[in-house]
Length: 121
Image 1 (cartoon, rainbow, N blue to C red):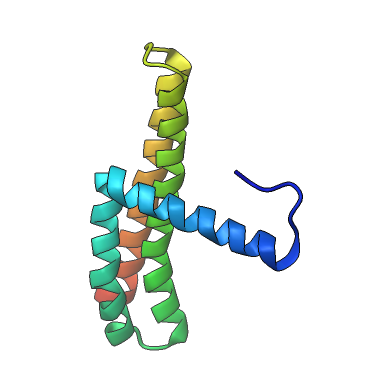
Image 2: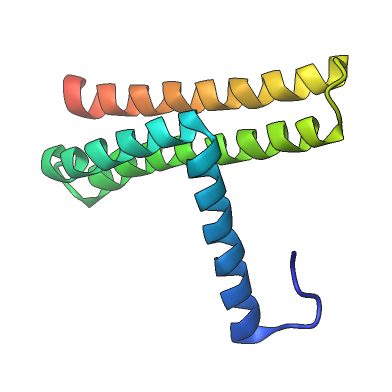
């Protein structure tokens, strides 16, 4: 949890620690996050090799990073909903479905960017 009494460098260090804890939890508990991490590890070097300039390279890599970011948000939503309870509720299902849709759109975004920059260009 965030320390209310800390500031400056200590707060930044604490925040970094919480972030690494979150990344570790996502990697350990979320298969989709692991798969998308492997995708980043494969595609980042490919982007550096195939991208024809800094902007193309940045677009290719950031499109895959965005997938990971959205997957983290989706996993956080799912964890919060699961924490509330296992009862089936329309709003819980809607929240999970919307999070899943966000991941889908981020994957579509990445695919389109890669398609336009690598295949079409």
